[in-house]
Amino acid sequence: MSALFESVLKDGFSVEAYLICIACALVCGIIAAISASIRSMPSKSFIISLILLPMIVSTVITMVNGNVGTGIAVMGAFSLVRFRSVPGKAKDIVSIFLSMTAGLACAGGYVAIAILFSLIVGAVLFALSFIPLGCDEMMSLNITVPESLNFTDAFSDLFKKYTKSHKLVKTKTSNMGSLYKLSYKIKPKDRTLLKEFIDELRCRNGNLEISIFESAEEGESL
Image 1: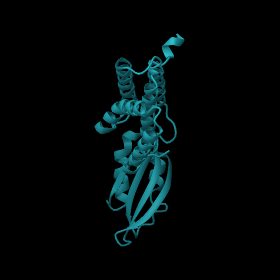
Image 2 (image 1 turned 45 degrees about the vertical axis):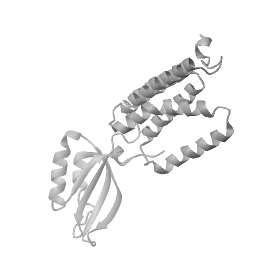
Image 3 (image 1 turned 45 degrees about the horizontal axis):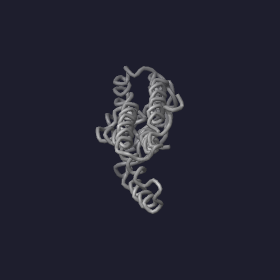
Image 4 (image 1 turned 90 degrees about the vertical axis):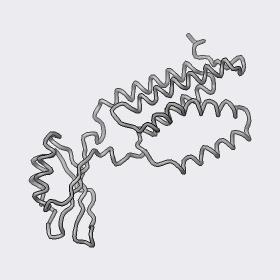
């Protein structure tokens, strides 16, 4: 059993060993992509990136193994990617680290460890995606009201009727101060009643703009 977790590169680098590492990296990338797709809708480009990232990392690390100068140059090249990337959700960042870690393991020839690691992390992500944690039940509600409306208690009865909890998190003026934009965090009692909730809010705010969406859509950060 212990031999299964030994490096395929222990006898030296060869074309056969490299192909094994690349194939393993591809499998790990597919596992990472599947894990990132559970109960979410990542873009096609992000899925492709997760699949290819372990293969790229594995090849790069294999090339710079033992060469300090090349390693420093590659580190500088990778650091430039940070300034071209857009901040993403915490789950996306975890998926990227999963792909990179699997690629590093494959670069060392530890293909069994790389696949086992990917399967374990993927299984944990799968299990956690079905457990309500943090603010999974929270939604964001934006309401635009005229300046003549005292919004402090204008919607209290509606919040009590349709939500388990609510909190005003941001208020700002708009349209030369003639409008107020209110941002709430709410926990709906029944999501099937969101239309009725919005319709009643419209009657209070003069039929101005109202939006309601999942809190996760705003993006998360580590």
